[in-house]
Length: 349
Image 1 (cartoon, rainbow, N blue to C red):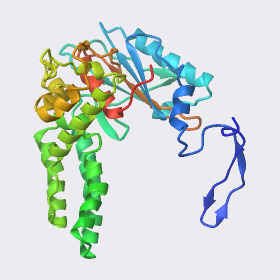
Image 2 (image 1 turned 90 degrees about the horizontal axis):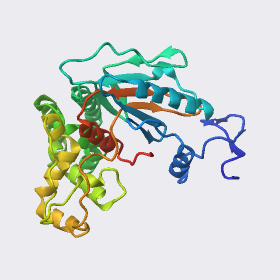
Image 3 (image 1 turned 90 degrees about the vertical axis):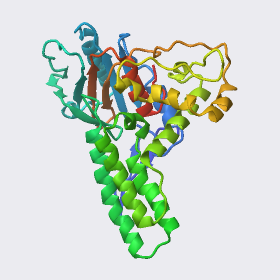
Image 4 (image 1 turned 30 degrees about the vertical axis):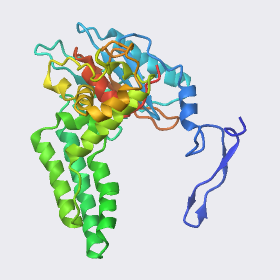
């Protein structure tokens, strides 16, 4: 406990230092114990209803609710329960930064959704919000996200041109592109690229072609990067039997291919998990090495390990933002695929 209590801290700006104060909350920044301590301290923050899920990632927490038969009682109770948990643990929720998004693709939608209230304040409903750096919209299109990434990448191209004018080598320019520009264009690319429109894909590739002309080096296409990352993530899930999505990768009796996931819409078919299975089946050499590590007796169910439901909020002792997403659509696998791939971590249940 001496490591966590009575820690002196001060702020330095230039040659000026603030007064030293003693802290007994939080953990030292960059501490390797921080992820473990976070999981330990928030372990009791669990959903009280089976139709809801709480996904925690650092100071961002997503509360996801699956609404059936227009009955959102469990979803609303979950929000109030989580707000009470935060109050009991001295966490302040900033309701003004809390957002709710509803994803509903039914042809006949129910009555108007009444806003969620937290501590007497109504939560604003939005058509798009930014979660872990990725823009998610109520129609699950990715034009907003792509436009944001392309805009940032174009700004970074200015620095690439500046380095070119200073006669830096092509190797240095290519490294700068990979670290500063490609990292932006491919942020969470395995989540959204499969459902990108042709226009969005062309906009992304134009940035790559511009950078290629500047560096005079061949650069990988965004589609190739996305394919590589999908395969890498799929292999990671296969090797981790405790991963929530491990059961979605089921070997056929032959032991050479994985069972394809049933999809009824192109949106689901182009999402991460169905696409990852397809890529694994199309790369037999890679698949053979993976198949050897999987017992043929394993025949897990194709359904997700828990029903998917959505909401997002960062909760911190002093500055907390919280946004909710409630989903009223039966294609649970799509949203499960989207959020698990986006967060790239196992939810604490």
